[in-house]
Amino acid sequence: MLVLNATFEPINVCTVRRAVVLMLKGKAELLEHGVHELHSASATVPRPAVIRLVTYVRIPRDPHRRKITRRAVFARDGWTCQYCGSRSNLTVDHVIPRSKGGGSNWDNIVASCAPCNRRKGDFLPPQAGMTLRRAPRVPNPQVFIHVASPTIPPAWRQYLAEAA
Image 1 (cartoon, rainbow, N blue to C red):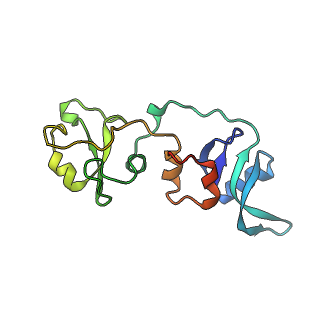
Image 2 (image 1 turned 120 degrees about the vertical axis):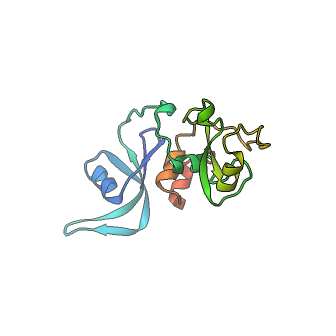
Image 3 (image 1 turned 180 degrees about the horizontal axis):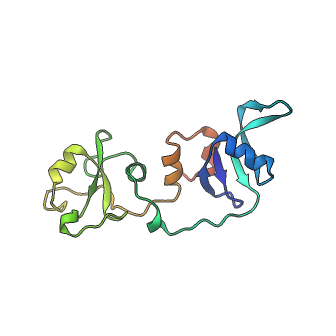
């Protein structure tokens, strides 16, 4: 279930159970619900799809502290090789190889298909005759929503920016 801050900013994805608990405790309100209902011995509640927290929760915004994972890099790069555009056999590549002083940070890691990664090897892209389709960058925070739920339900789309 998509969790929105009090300002309608997407901040997390949670389980249906967690969403219902937040609603029952009065900490969240239901914005969008699914087709089916949830039944207990004494109550029936709509199955939440999108909830909004009642009070604002401060989220740390230091993007460099966000964990770099393969899935997050792939999601940021649109699940395509940043050298040739292939969508299969993806790996991660350090644009400036670590052996040449390149770091493991958002500005130096890109999605790369295995053939391009092998071709580039321990060289800089120009030395290998390769160019990046797009310079690596710190991802939009909404990329992490796409990592948590690669398939985005239709009920979520109006709350997520298209440029994720």
